[in-house]
Structures are given as C-alpha cells and as structure tokens.
Length: 149
Image (cartoon, rainbow, N blue to C red):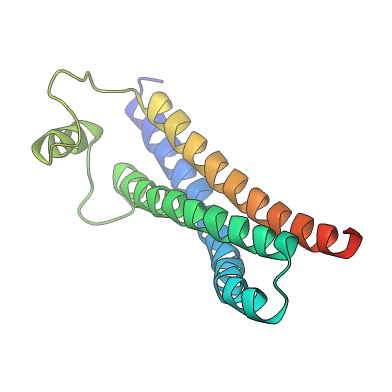
C-alpha cells in the first residue's frame, strides 16, 4: 500500500479500531478498582488465600491493561492525525522525526510502512484485550476456588 489515499484510509480505519480500546478500558477500571478495594477488605474480613490471590492478580492485570490502554489511546490519536481527522494533521515521516527528537527512536531506524504501523497497533490492542480477559479470569478463578476449597 503505497498510494497516499490507501494509507489515509488505513489510518482512519485503524483509528476507529483503536477507539474500541476505550470501552474495554472503562470496564477494566471498574474491575481494577473493585480488586484494589477488595484485597484489603478480604485480608481483614475473610483472610483466605484464593479470593485474595484472585483479587491481587486481577489488580495486576488491571494495571497491565491500563498501560496498554494508554499506548492504544496514544496510537489512536496519532492515527487520527495520520488520517487528517485531527488538528494539526501529521505525516508518518514527521511523526518519526518527532520520536527521534524526543529520544524515543533512533535516527538510524528506517521509517515503517503504514501497514507495519497498523500491525504494531493491532498487537497492542490484542495485548490490552488479553490483559482484560486475564483480569476477569483471575477474579472468576479466585471466586471459584474459594467456593471449592
């Protein structure tokens, strides 16, 4: 995809996809806060290992999800600029120069194609989803083991 209009379309669709990470993050924040409150409450009210372990893991996975949500949200804003939907618009080559100026990339790093950039963003979104799924699994497993053991 070297055509400029194809790159603009790809950037716009990618921004739309990455926007979905926001809803996921809101749900994860609710679980993270519940786990953060639940760990000390469980320690005092019912000091059993499985519920506390489940809540602790859910808290850790929630923090991981928050990190990925931060990255996905940043990438969404960048792709909106690539697509020209945000002001000021931004060309990928300009973005690469800014990364070098901020010390977040080296000057020797060649510019990536739009397709490569999209693959990287999709990977971050998948990691965000994985952290959220693991967060839910930790809570369910901790509760399930609390009942069985």
